[in-house]
Image (cartoon, rainbow, N blue to C red):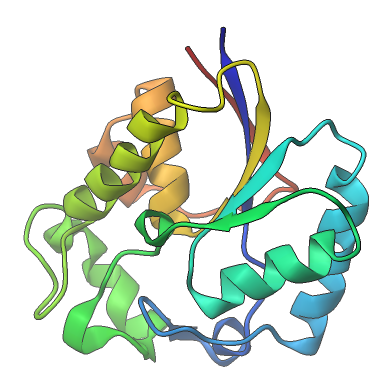
Length: 178
């Protein structure tokens, strides 16, 4: 039995609006982000979702809480769904951090982790998902590293291609995990 995984990014944070790469900093949703989280809930509440897994970073948790408040759908936090840890560069302006992303594919950010390490961490979450959720439709709320892991492990996209691509938001991505 396959697991249907729906992936959504956390809603827009105050850091996103300021052009800051939060990394492992928690961050909070902006006013627009809270509205978008409500939209996510409207889109997904009747979508057959059995449970919601979210990164434990506050901006992702807040997205899940707003989207699924007053529903019986459980929200489970998992640290492995976090964004890449930029280490000493958490909170740096994205315009300064992201142009150097490729050099951190395998080399960790100072005091942090590499993109490959972050994707591998999310891969361990995927390994465990099959232990309990076979045949289920689950929603995962996370970050760039979360989506890259899904693309890499479930669609076979190379990390080299992912790190070189520009991020384009859309209202959710769907994956099937055998």
